[in-house]
Image (tube, rainbow, N blue to C red; front, top):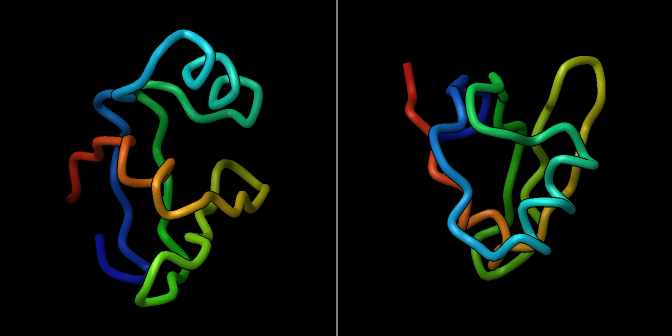
Length: 69
């Protein structure tokens, strides 16, 4: 995804522990998110979820599959 691009989460590729952590942050399949920014080399990825903003590590963000608009 590019910065300021919206999309819908289609899948979270990870175990039950990762999926539970993402659910606690409001990230689950079917939820609409907006990517705010990222850093080029493994920095955090900022994602807007609802009215909040979540910063994810590069590795965790790579496990979230998103369908873009």
